Image (cartoon, rainbow, N blue to C red):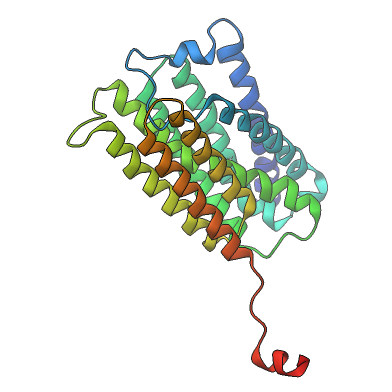
Length: 264
């Protein structure tokens, strides 16, 4: 396969799979059974399920991913290095989303766990490549490539814990060895620590960090409404940790001593 053919294939796949995400959502849940009905369980909601308003982030994810798909499909972007490096892993993540939706439609919870791990692995590759490359050359790259991948990665890196907690609860394994609240706190510590570390490693990627904070705050809000105060406190603490990592990563470097002396 020539480089030009590979680039064309990448452009088509990314665009079609970015479009497939909202289309699959509509076909799976807008016609008949709603998402809430399809995923409802007699076991109840897990403690890591965020408040309902948090899921509005999917509007941003779908919209920005579609924008990314259109942008990278332009003839002028065929040889763009950032689009080349992120295209195939991003397309894989979009395909994982579609598969996740189908498993969720039929309430196959462990299937959704497998799909969200697939999405996370794909997005981790794309996000790492975004961070490894030089800063975006223009506003279009920042808003139409870096932002969609970063927001999507931030949401999925937090959602993977909630998705796993839901599968454990449905299976009746949510309180093995430790109470459910204790497991939830452990998972939150893992999510917050990973989020803070990736925020620093990405040199203060605000799109990623603020999406993780959005998810953690929504978990705190849900638990303040009567689920578990301990989980609410842990979620709020982890959100604060990620915010602190963001502030630390984005502060300007200190001036060299020579510069300070020359200004005094």
